[in-house]
Length: 519
Image 1 (tube, rainbow, N blue to C red):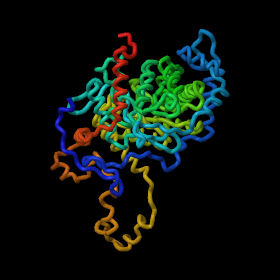
Image 2: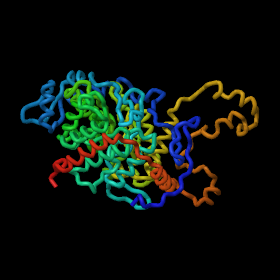
Image 3: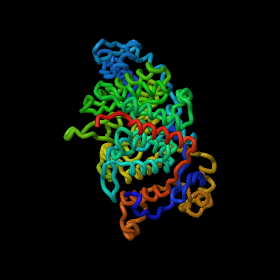
Image 4: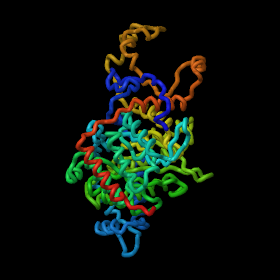
């Protein structure tokens, strides 16, 4: 068991600038804060090309349409003016219907956490990072790869709570398959609420589970149902079944959450060469059409409901058919997806992903490509921010630490650059003069302790010193770090009245059998 492993002594970590925001002695980090991108997002293609994709997407929805498997959803679409024929699941949308519907989407909204200090804003230049979600397996180098379980699930939540760079819990970091599916959502959301006080993602897997999630979140925030309709407190990822299909559980989630004013992130999973055309333009056009249909539907349910444009277009390895991530094509799709989201003034979601099977150079460079594609592409929500491995099939403890290091580097890069007289340092330059050095100047002595970002995993010793220290590699340092940081976890406070009501609801729903299953 992970809890029984020896916990190595932690090394000191950097403070935030000017010494603020220190937590436990083992972890020095910036205070929790909303990040903003201080420069315009990259425009990868021209405005004319964006309009070409937009009109091609509308043509696809008008002429080809898509299959909507949920009868009640089709009825709502028909009432809004979509072309729905009796007994046929195919739905077609007039361009004016789509354009009119997306006009009511909020360009920004606040996602409220149980702890208001952990609220995050979506839209504009805001950026927020979420923990990995939905892995069936987890791993560490001590115990290897294993099926998801509640112990590891809870440990990942502890790490998400401990690190300020992780603004949200993006879903189940690993699926705890040792809990029966009928009640798993009850235990998982209970753990969200008690192990963390950050915003979280719930899964749209049928009406009962969504209804339970709404009620548990309402209890956690101390709101009435009417109050909750005006306060986004959680979110759900709604994946289309590419190509061109919206399934029943996901549509149930959209209807229930949009009616309650809770944001959904419409995210087509379009892999170029497999579930989408092999060209990036074709894959992004399919992504855009499916996203527009789902986004428009949220507004048919409730005009003004918060919703996000999710991009998850990448390519496959044409030799094996396996998904590839962190590729040049993935970055292109991230940038173009961001341009489309901004064209519609809708908050944008992207991801930090890789296809590596272990924490190695591939895991690092694919994650870096994915991260910069997200940041420069204008993403507001970066899903799978820490832990993603094996194309999403595994959440790795060591990868969590690698990604936290990368996310903190991104955060440092996004900090303002000061050009004050003090920072321009002309007096120090004059003091040193030609051919000198700055180590001993007063200017350096006042700043050296927190002048630069101190990485978690990088080892900057020279070769001989590193070799004398046992030649540790990054994955070994990451292994020691997650253990020391897990040991530093402190549970957030929870009002006893709220805890009692939450426990009573979970017990009641478990006694009722939870959500129905066929096994």
